[in-house]
Image (cartoon, rainbow, N blue to C red; front, side, top):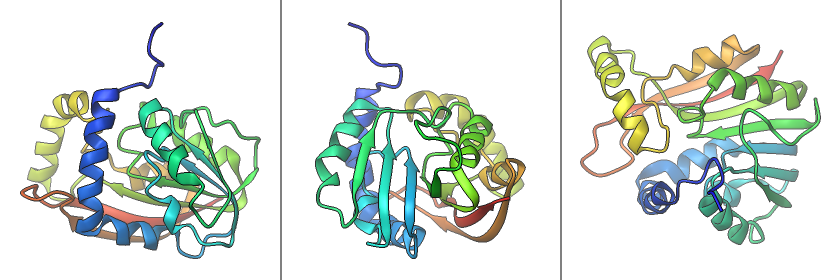
Length: 211
């Protein structure tokens, strides 16, 4: 039987190790900031192994956690029961969310928009499932504002994407969010190195409203 279309077990196993180290270098605090103050019904796209789950406040009444990669989804399901909120982990992709129109109070992406196959389609889906005035919370690594660094990101993007689960280091995700019909209300842009001996890259924590 063929693997599911998003199955990437080698990358998933590597990501489980890499992400755990990144948490201790500061990602855990970034996740806390990303999710603080959320309430109501929430959808998180690309939950990975569920590292955000522990940071959702009890004011969230229900979380639909979408993850297409089977190995990561299995890990997410294993930790969902220990969270403060009711979590349902489901198979699904960012460009075809298993949700009705205008059914969520908030949508969350964390280190996901770099790797979705079609960023515009994923953001259109986020816009679709949010209620009017609903909030998009995002935490992403993004294209550098320094011309030479950005040129280097463009150069390595094709090879990097092949070996890093589809990740593109040169995407301007904030501009893409605005182009998708969201009103950006806050951004905090900063340099961050998720692993030892890895140069800092541009990251952003932000919030946007469904217009």
